[in-house]
Image 1: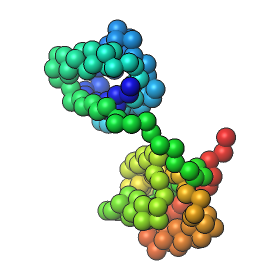
Image 2: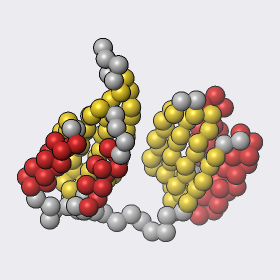
Image 3: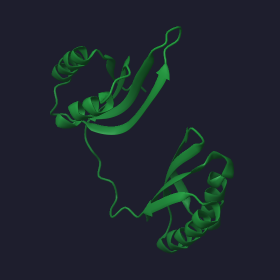
Image 4: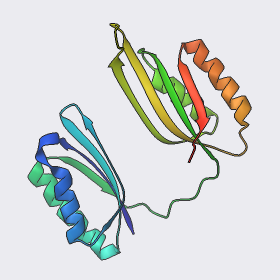
Length: 174
């Protein structure tokens, strides 16, 4: 059985160590763990595996940790095993002058064409040597076999040109 957990809390309270201690005490295993610092906050998500009674015990311990450390936490038991999606993995990176709705536009372009977005990260920062805000993104995509890569690349680069976005779309290399 699996349990997905999302957490948001202050960087300074060390909630990740508390959660990992609870996982160990409940004999559960981490399948995936990701954290990121957002200003003075830390966000984390975990995918946990264990038998049903260990997961149930963990949920009780997590509720106690949530209250004690005053963090936001939610968890969900996936209803079934994930289905394998067929496709070719690609990375997509963009950079542009920061303007509203760039992330929405790029994401909509991909989803409208049936492209599966596996991961996305985005950030805004000041350009070196200039007083300009730059917005950059990095996507991990799964392009279905029915989508013609050459046509997708050409259409996407035209789309980026229309919005003044510099982009790279290339296969994931191992």
